[in-house]
Image 1 (cartoon, rainbow, N blue to C red):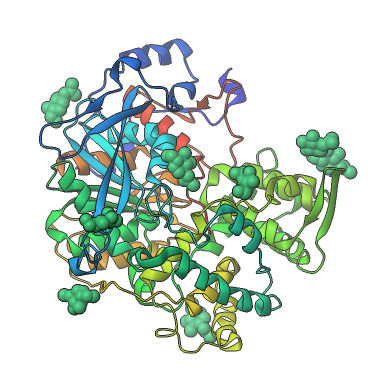
Image 2 (tube, rainbow, N blue to C red):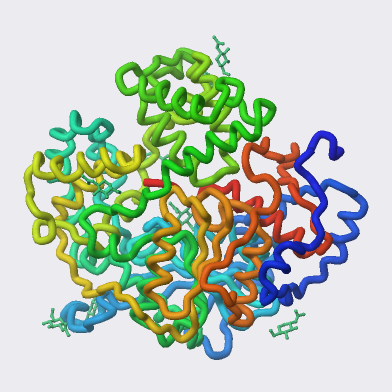
Length: 601
Ligand SMILES: *[C@@H]1O[C@H](CO)[C@@H](O)[C@H](O)[C@H]1NC(C)=O
Ligand SMILES: *[C@@H]1O[C@H](CO)[C@@H](O)[C@H](O)[C@H]1NC(C)=O
Ligand SMILES: *[C@@H]1O[C@H](CO)[C@@H](O)[C@H](O)[C@H]1NC(C)=O
Ligand SMILES: *[C@@H]1O[C@H](CO)[C@@H](O)[C@H](O)[C@H]1NC(C)=O
Ligand SMILES: *[C@@H]1O[C@H](CO)[C@@H](O)[C@H](O)[C@H]1NC(C)=O
Ligand SMILES: *[C@@H]1O[C@H](CO)[C@@H](O)[C@H](O)[C@H]1NC(C)=O
Ligand SMILES: *[C@@H]1O[C@H](CO)[C@@H](O)[C@H](O)[C@H]1NC(C)=O
Ligand SMILES: *[C@@H]1O[C@H](CO)[C@@H](O)[C@H](O)[C@H]1NC(C)=O
């Protein structure tokens, strides 16, 4: 392949602009012999693709010589080798944590009621300490996360740390799990309810919700009321104690920032290296009736999609030829998609595949998730351009996915943790009737982002929630942590806006904000080696920028790039760096940027 066909590739010297802006950011922790990679770049000249094959987890295939349990000095648990990721060992273990971390007298008559949590550790090659990760959700599985994205994250963090992740209590393979149904069969039979159109569906949704929340309470049993974020924060100390590590090193994404803020408030003395990335407002989360801040910038990200599309032009963005200005394109899109509310489109592919493309599918299953990841904008534009030209097939195939929630506990877990954390149920909700609820949420949705409707069913459950709130966590300002927090954000995040990062900044003394000047959810939505340097310098040296608020450029052109993936599954660099290790980080970030692990509800 040559550069002609890939005009986005341009040479750039080792982040000079970055150095100029922020001299305290050095790049000292690249202990990797990258000479081979450097040679490769020279041979390839201008084009570099990332070998995906080596990043895929090797499943459960054990190295037969090394299947025994492993123990390490100073640790209280043993580990079993459970695969490799990018040629590094993965180790698995489990720990039991008390059902109630804060009051032992609630742990049953014998004091032994507990949760069992799976742990997975990706070993750094020259590491003694572990960085704990949380992928978000709530309900995201740490073990799933590390299998899928551990390779790229360890590329960014470097070999000096192990990455350690876990399924939080209630999540995925924790025992017990937060499921609102006793069996997958019951879920399949009982979970279907119309909740796409407000207020038309509200009668059915309201009636169904009263049964659903009772089923949650019953299915969760005694454990249910201890599935919340402050308990999980305390579980992270149990994990540190089990591996004999006094200090918390942490990188949490999205919901993981609520976990991080909660941890840092409850255990400031252990908070030595806490990074929160893609920040949610903990005051809204714990005390608010409605999450008013969450969607502050969602419509701005959509406008950014339109804006960047017009800038990219018709060669790169299929929608650009349909309008003469961004204003015209914006209103054309809104008008066409809005029309689907009353006139969904029938799509026939063949006699085993046909159906209806409706407003919900396009707006909430298509556009909204794409806002999280600009790497998906190119494809979104293609699908919407076909739709606007009168062919709904592409959008139907892409967005009309059958209910994928049926067999998984993911959404239950999300509801249970969120509702147990916050102001839920009759004690906290002004009134219990259906119209009383609509009186609150309809004006809120009307006055909020056009994407607010995704949380329609959530508020019905919040009003009716029968499980009592057992935690006493109260977010507060002026928290003095052992070391300043590092707060990461993009400029326009569709679900965790910059203003929430500022709220965290105001809560934690001496914390610092590093903003990547781009669109998307969490810093990993767009590639920025500058950002990676801040992460490394923080973890290794405890360095934070001098300024309270520092900005990092995005590397290359992240918007409306045809996904540059070679036939053999390689992702291709959009910027060439002189430093081979920076090049590797850039490639890892591109890989993260096209990931979709952080999904909306
Ligand atoms: C391993 O880590 C130690 C301590 O962080 C560091 O001094 C040393 O240079 C590292 N070695 C390599 C080969 O990266
Ligand atoms: C601990 O729980 C017991 C039983 O639920 C309760 O009586 C007691 O007040 C609690 N203690 C504290 C300090 O909250
Ligand atoms: C707790 O301990 C009691 C008495 O030793 C035992 O009967 C029970 O099975 C234990 N429960 C759990 C959940 O381990
Ligand atoms: C649950 O964990 C298993 C094992 O790590 C993983 O294969 C699976 O994808 C996870 N499920 C979810 C929904 O995260
Ligand atoms: C979902 O659950 C049903 C009932 O247990 C089962 O028959 C079906 O195979 C499951 N589907 C998937 C994709 O796991
Ligand atoms: C119908 O179309 C889908 C999608 O193109 C394809 O996967 C499926 O095999 C087709 N079914 C038949 C019977 O042709
Ligand atoms: C609509 O788009 C689909 C998929 O791109 C294509 O197969 C089909 O031929 C198109 N239909 C018409 C009428 O152009
Ligand atoms: C609508 O939103 C704005 C800004 O978000 C707020 O100031 C105003 O109070 C809201 N109005 C209503 C009726 O909720």
